[in-house]
Length: 120
Image (cartoon, rainbow, N blue to C red; front, side):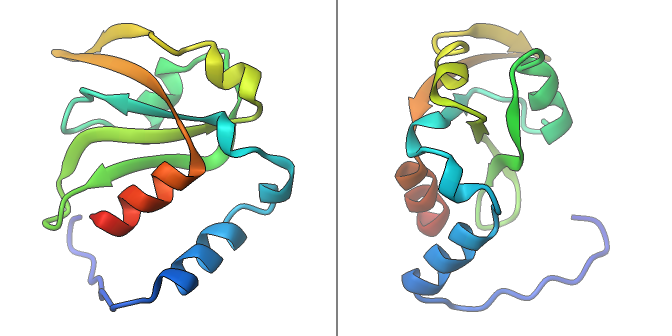
């Protein structure tokens, strides 16, 4: 992460849920069915590249989550939230290469995103 200083604190699940709920001002208008999980991403993948991968489909602003391990390295998986369930279903099963890696897109949910973020 460059030369930035980051502090990590222990937190309770209720506080994490509260932060996730309030981090998206449109959360009341979205459903948990509008999420997808990407697998097989290049380890140097960026959110911008994921937006390009889904070009033509509306993704909720700031709702792409790149998963990182405990050392801050990208794991090759990410989550994205689309503006609607219908849009989230369009890329399902999409199998393309990004760089030298073969990617796949699967249906996901807000609960899976939360669970994965807490597990890491």
